[in-house]
Length: 141
Picture (spheres, rainbow, N blue to C red):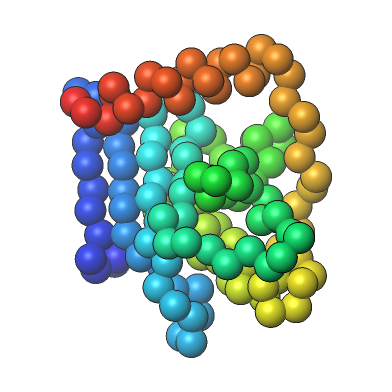
């Protein structure tokens, strides 16, 4: 289904990482992305291809500008859960995000929908920091 992609089992079977290329439409460039998933955590979707950011703008609908970590759904609406296939949800949503990204670069107007991100609570920030610090150790195994 996705040629030129890698699939890795992480942390003794507790997580997976898929790295591959998406092309949102036939005239688009190829974008290298990864999806990392650990049981009980939402998937982390990153674009590894450098993205163009127009002067004075910030990437819309991302969790991290520097890591290019995409926001693909609103977690509080339970749009994704572990009972859904990543290949049928997260990967197509990432391709759709890239489609809207290309239009945003061309027009300056984000048409991909979504809601403004709320500021995370202090507990959420600390929990994510702890998980982010632990992630490299888990990826080595």
